[in-house]
Length: 193
Image 1 (cartoon, rainbow, N blue to C red):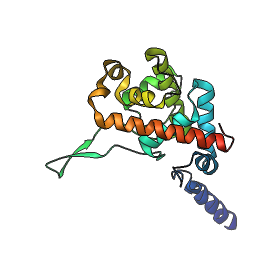
Image 2: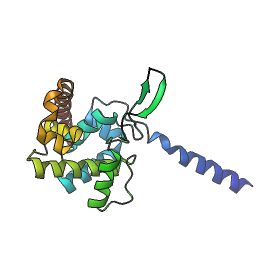
Image 3: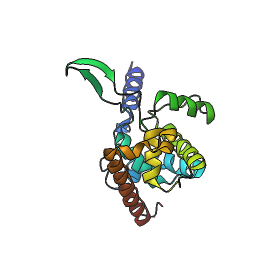
Image 4: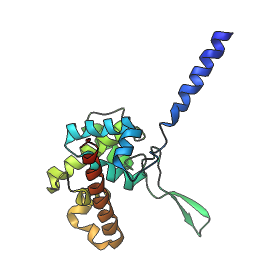
């Protein structure tokens, strides 16, 4: 009986995950994110090696999309302010990937078991997407602003210039660019660049 109680206690503690699904406590400091969430940093470094998208660009994009919340979803839409109509889109997870784009990634990148709420899969998706944007649209992988615009609007929308008619999105892309530069400077200061 004592062995069963110990096993149950260990399993219960393991299922809690030690808070690993919680976002980092200080989203304003890339070094703190890397220190507090070494798995996140490791996943981003792996993506950087595979796809060439710098950690600071990934971090800035994830910050904008989900604030590092693994199970982030878009808000509900309501008719007349009270009747729920469903979510604004199928965007989900750290990267806020849409269902169709996620399926395309899983087919093309050979990651059939990938999940949007796993940081390793979300960063790999982001790297794959930005690599494709670089190849098809000529956007530098270090250009957080335009990579974000292509990420948000889709490559076809970006090519059409749909973002130019959305002042709010242009402002958001400048924030992503600014955060990317801040994260880059911080990562350099703590030797993680």
